[in-house]
Image (cartoon, rainbow, N blue to C red; front, side, top):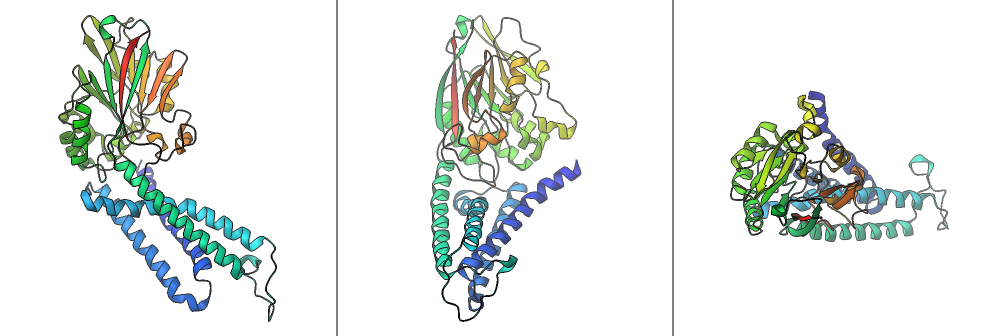
Length: 403
């Protein structure tokens, strides 16, 4: 248990230091290869050290429960984005540099035999160095433009997704019942109380019958529980408001996350369910705990979550991780509502997205073997990647239809 927590804390720092060291050596080779460039090398190194220090301070602020309102948030996001984009830029520049050193070229007539570079490779020709330096400048410029666009999209008001969901033999009194899904709020450093209150106000205009939160209510700190509860205290479904935990709720603290749900006026479902009634029709909403609960000797029990449903009732399952969809369907869920993936945050569609690393259910609507799944893109971002491109924040309004 303790070793896992230590690994979660140390791994990001190790990646941070490793990528910045690699980037320094590449930048030195391209922009300051000669001894007379010592001043330039120091400038590159000091700039990277300053950025690393900024990231550590920002991360520590998030872990301690601090929030970054207004201008502080807009200053912190480019710093974090620069480190998120360092790895792909480093890999691309490193590959280009390696190829440039290995591909044959016509050297300038040397006055003496050239010394070999590290690894026995000939030194990079000046023409290729200049070309790669210009390419690197272009890459960094492009990354800056993408960062600005991604930060803007991540901070924009959520898109409202409206979807009709067919339910077999739905009771006539439940025809048109609406479920508003919010997911992956990640209350904390970047998701402030003021922003959550704005999201709640927009959500309230949709006048949903049922409101559900499908996990990752908090981001990294239990101190975000109060802002979450206050931010969403005015948002309630006409027939009920329900929530489940995601993995980040355990990282922040299950007790604090549970208190946030209670104080916001919602019902927490942990391998349990609740009945929603309208007229003579009823709907059963079950919720399963997140596998992250295994860290605290818990369990995920799909059958138990739906055990209270009557045979004729439609069953909606709240399950943070969409990869568990087949197990939810096997337990009898007609509709599963998930989050967790954020749509990859950087996406060119449902298939060209990093969310594919988490499984086939990346974002949006899926139907398999008579059961249905909706994967919410989320409202917040993971602190280390404060960008969204092609996967904007979302409010999902699902309307049940008789089929």
